[in-house]
Each structure stands twice: as C-alpha cells, then as structure tokens.
Length: 527
Ligand code: HEM
Image (cartoon, rainbow, N blue to C red; front, side, top):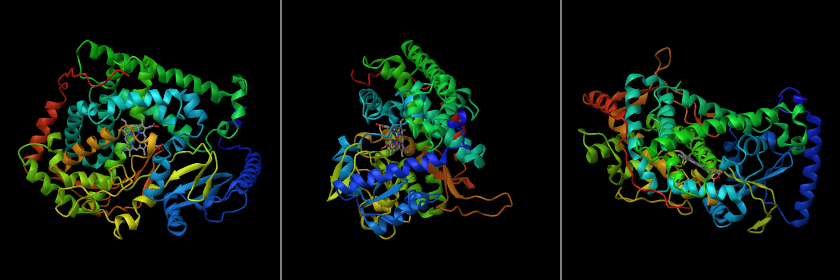
C-alpha cells in the first residue's frame, strides 16, 4: 500500500490529471461567475502554466511581471496563483489586509503529522500560532535580542579563524558558525566545534526530514487528504511520521530542559528556552519546539544571505573597499569591530540591505477578495515575487542588476534612504504583514557582525579551481536548498589585510571559546 503514498515511481498520474482537470473547470467556472481574475499568460490545457516556469521560476515570473504588470494570475494545474510584483501592491494586500492573507495552505505531512502544529511557521493563523509567535517576538524583538550579541561576536571571530585555517571550506564555515550562534541563542549550547557535532547532526536531520516532506509531490496525502483515514497498518508513512514526531519532541525537550536547568543554576546566560521558561503561557513542549522552530527558520536563511555577501564582494570589489575604508576609519586596526560600532557604519548596513534585495517566499489568501477591480478567489495562493519587486527599475533605477549599496544612502553617505512600502528595510526579504519574519533583528545583527569582522580581517577575492584557473562566479547561478535558495558554490580567496590580522584573530578565538559571561537581566515580559 505504501507505493500509493511516498513512492516516486508509481504515482496514479491519471487520477491526478482527472482531479486537477475537474478542479480547474470548477474554479474557472466559479471565478467567471464572481469576477475577473488579474490577467496572466495563456497556459496549456489542464496543466495550465505549470511547465512554463522552469527550474529557476522567479526569472520567468519576473519576465511576466514586466509584461503583465504588478499583479497577474497563473493556473498551476487547477490551482490559481496570484503573483504580486510591486512593493505597493504587496503592501496594500499583505500588510493592509494582513488578516486575510496571513494564513497558510494545509501542510499535512510537515505541519500536521511531523510537527503537530508546534513548528508555528507552518500553521494557519490559529490560537497556537498566535501564542507561539508572540512568545518568539518577546525573545527576539530589538531590545531582547541584544542579549545575544556576545554569542554573535564570538561566532564572528570563530568564522574568521576558520577562514584563516581552511579558506576553501568557506561555505561550510558560514553554515556552521551561523548554526552555532542560533543554537546558543535558542538553547544556550556551547559553540559547535565541527560540522559533525552530534547536536548539529541531530537537529540537521530533523530539518532535512521537514524540507523533503514539504517538497511538492513528495506525499500523495497532500493531494488526497482522505488518505489520513487509512488504517495505520496500511500507511507506513503515517506511522513513520508519528514516530519521527515523538523522536523530535524528545530531542527538543532534552535541549530545552537542559538549558532551563543550566540557566536556573546560574551556569549560563539567558537563551530563548530560558526566556520562554519565564512565561507562564507556554508549556515545556511548546517552548522546546519553539526554540527548534527558530533554529529551523533562522540558520539556513541567515547562512545563505552571507553566501550572497561573499558573492557580492568577489564581484564588486569597489563596494568591499569602500566598506573596509569605513571600518578602518571607525574601528581602526588595533581591535575587531563590535556592536557599538554599528551605528557608525552606515555603508556596512547599506551592504546588508543590498544583499537582501535578492530573495523570495509565498503566503496563501484564504478568503475571497477584490483588488483594483480584480477578483482574488478564496483559497488562492498569493505569491510575492521578491525578485521582481527588488529589481523594479521604477524603484531602484536602471542599474537594479548591479550590487550598489549606495542606493540605500543619501548624498552625504551617512543617512539611510529607503523606498516606501518596505517596512523601513529597503527590500522585501523579511516578508509582510502578520507573517513577517520574527527573527529579523537576530538575522540582521548576525549579518552585521560577521560582515564587519570578515571585512576588517580579509580582502575577499576570486579563488582558483582545481586546475589553478581563476574563477569568476556567476551571479545568476543558484542552488535550491529546500527552504531557501543560495548561490552555487564557487572558490574564493581570503587574504589577511595586514600582518596583525592572523595573530589577533587566533588570540581572540582562544579567548571566546571560554563560556560567555553570565547575564541575569530580565528580558521578557510575562505574556
Ligand atoms: C537572512 C535571514 C532571514 C530571512 C531572509 C528570513 C525571511 C523570512 C520570511 C520572508 C518570512 C515570512 C515567510 C512567509 O511569509 O511565509 C520569515 C518567517 C519567519 N522567520 Fe525568518 N528570515 C531570516 C532569519 C530568521 C531568523 C534568524 C529567525 C529566528 C531565529 C527566523 C524565524 C522566522 C520564523 C519563526 C518565521 C515564521 C513567522 C510566522 O509564520 O509567523 N528567521 N522569515
């Protein structure tokens, strides 16, 4: 019976085609009787526009945006997809009508069976989502997240140390130190020493399971929810998911209870687990999963953004030199940058904004709605096409394809200059409305300290391939990493900028592996 559920070899394609055809006809009929969908490209019978998207769909979606304007619709085998392509339309719908658009599609395997609603990023806007999101916000808002800065400074130094010792594995180092910072933030765990660290391995296995279960077409139960009613002896996928949930709960509870115990004993600094412990409205199981959710949502995203940073520095050395000049003027050469320098480094902050002009994700509209005369039927997937928004020539000028942090600064170079409808970010990388990223402050501060420290220490340049040839990376070569998209791997050279860099970094790295000083500042209100 399992071939009916998770096999990629024997799928009942004819059933799928039949159902989608009937569904398309019903939806088109309904739409035509209620109002007009936004215009969009003509597709093929039954499958609609599905096979026109290509491997890197945002390129085709953006070509259509140039043709059909800021809002258009697609038919993906019966499912209507509305694509939003301008900051204004996205803000009008996803911010101003957030109550309608903040919901999520049903995710049976991931949201319901593997996570049972405890991974709140997958939930519809239910009571548990509201409570967990509020708790996450308490721990990660601008003020609260300052308490994690010593951990972030520690990991920035460890990143530079790793780049000195083994520059070829630069992508892995970024992944590891970013995961390490988020793990310490969530559960107050000590620094992750290597890629095979057992804690990291266990939590990464969880993430891989979630990412592959979320892949469209992986489980037929997503298409045929009645399969949930099959007796469990016939549905190994169901039994496996239940077992995995028990195992993952045990793992998160272990991390959480251990953190609670260490923080209560005054042995370590506060972390998300201990902040949640102080809140009386979150159970231990919820708190344990919440910290795991933050790890899941926060580590691969922040690492991928730093891979983009390296790509940008290799391709735009003038931006790198300008940032280094700013860092040298403010920080000097006798110490490493720290968070107190942040306000004096507007160009470095503009680099961070410029990095985020390149990202995309998508929400669901659960209600019927109208926008500027167009009808958006209930249940429509609404996708905000960040690529189109962040490369809109009307907003960013004709050089939108160039990495140019100056676009976010005024003429003096000291004051920020950000386009409207972007929540003051200058881009849409952190999403909209009620589902806006809760980890935005943590992400931006990790990016800041890692970027400032790396630029203080190294000239970042083109690396060589196995034959010794210098490689210019392709700015449009991406790899799909499940939850995010990042640049394809490419070689990079990291040259210490002066003779004091290596001894200074190695000495600091020795210091920071000692435990971070314990702080006892109360940081969260009771919910
Ligand atoms: C470069 C870094 C990051 C980027 C680009 C990013 C981007 C996003 C975006 C676009 C969303 C909205 C998704 C949607 O509308 O469905 C989101 C949601 C979320 N992010 Fe982030 N994020 C980053 C880092 C982080 C970090 C560091 C954390 C936590 C430590 C985090 C936790 C979350 C959570 C829990 C949600 C779900 C919110 C909800 O569903 O209510 N993110 N993120």
